Length: 147
Image 1 (cartoon, rainbow, N blue to C red):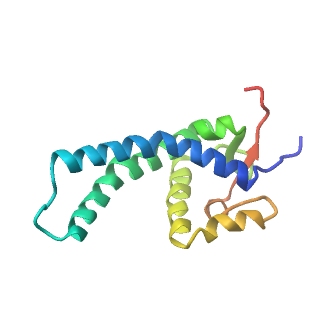
Image 2: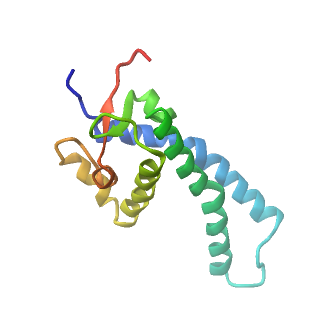
Image 3: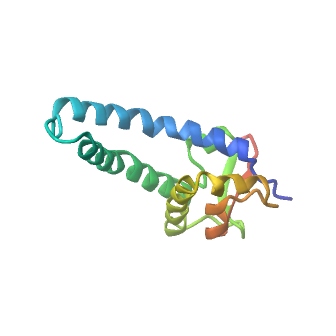
């Protein structure tokens, strides 16, 4: 059976679905923390923003990265990928290890920092691989819809 690779659009939809799981609760937690414990009210806003960014990272971003790495190393898909019928795996077809999956998550943030160029290359590679996929030798493949 020939592999068909997940399109960038399908992957974007899966990412947006997965983001709902983390973004909304994290924003609520940060807003409550900011309201309940006003940080450095008399100091500059930039210091307050820095502290809130640190809180956001440890309450939202890092747990999300760990969760996605764990679930992709165990099942090969997240909630959003399951709905979009795509699966992450090594190029060889095997499941990824947690270490490889976590490295993939970290590399996604490099792509964010490079003005999304790492994501855009997925439109031009043969296997529709983005920068984070290329670096860890992973592919996103379409799955049968009966799971």
